[in-house]
Amino acid sequence: MTRSGGPLDLARDRLRSDLEVLLQPAPASARSFAVTFVGPAGWGYEDGGPEGLATVTARLLVTRPGGRTRERLARTLDRLGGSLISSTDPESAEVGLWGPTDAWKPLLRIFADAVLRPTFSEDELARILRQVRERQLRQRVQPDLRADRELLARVFPKGHPYRLTGIGTPRSVDRITLGLVERFHRQHYPNRSGLLVLTASAPHRDLVRELSAFFPGSDLRPGPAPPSLPAGTPIREPLHVSIPGQSQVAVRLGAPSRPRSDPSYPALFLLNEVLGGRPLLSRLFQRVRERHGLAYHASSELEAMRWGGYWEAVAGTDPATRDRVVRLMRTEVQRLSTETIGRGELDRIRESSLGSLPLELETTASAHELAVEAAYHRLPLDFYRRWPATLRGLSPGELRKVAETEFRAGETALVTAGPPAR
Image (cartoon, rainbow, N blue to C red):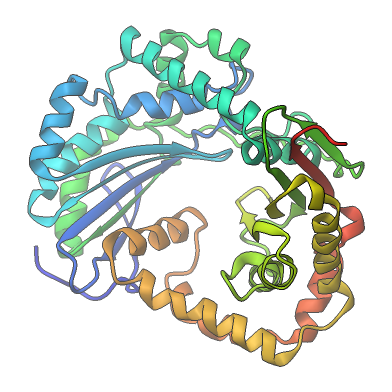
């Protein structure tokens, strides 16, 4: 391969099959490449099928691509130095592959087989179902996982895909059959609504030619329509989930938020960084953990997807200090909308956040994640070049105005999970 440009020089193209592809040059020092397929195959597309079907299908894709046995696949990937993975969320599924530059062509063939030509077998299905049931058990008995699940169930109404975690229930996974997996794959993977993202050092013309050979148009079908989303408001009554035998309480505060395409996203991003998204510097960490010493961890997260989103503030604490931690967290959420953030604090958080961007461009894996985000959300090709100016252009007053509608402690859902309350 020969280099062309840097990882911020994104380019869009289409294969002969009309499948869209986003191309990203690898970092200058990289000796590896990464490729991802993103398709409308998340659990929001299960369309009445058993819950967990999307997750099980994605996991099966990477076990026997193109008729290879699991053992043969492992040996081949080990010899070539590659790694093949898959993941799901409410809106999409991803199949990704990473490997050394000098093995990109044979690894691309394995990747294409996983997306388009997987081999499904009863023994692999049984193995994946056992893994999913183990995840369900952990979700029931581990405070953090249980609190996450219960928060989503209170933030989003019944029938909303964001309400679910993708692994279903013991009863639903018992209904998953090989036939349902094969049908779900046919309907959601080889279709023109999918996207390819490739981070590599070859000239774009060569990359498009190779990808066109691996993803012919005969394997692609029209994509499914997005599901309809029911409306609803968060359940405001606090919930404590008793889990006997646990010593730590997981605390979750959250509410619905805007999609990634919303013009207010940059402000929401920065507000979350101030609240708890920026390690060590954010308010939740500084005031709940550092100043008062009440939590093992305290942070926040903003999930902004295509159809919508949500934010959550999280903490882990001792049962005796649970109520104090909840009060402090509510106070910090409320302060975003009732007090204007000081210029010094805002600049410190903002520059720390922007300082992480160059670090993410140093490796193929982290740069590729940015490209996948840009592809999925249809971001402008120069988005990351303009991102610093976008954040620096936001004033404390603008942030407070957005926070007045998005971060109101009185309209959030509250869930705690851990030992039975005294």
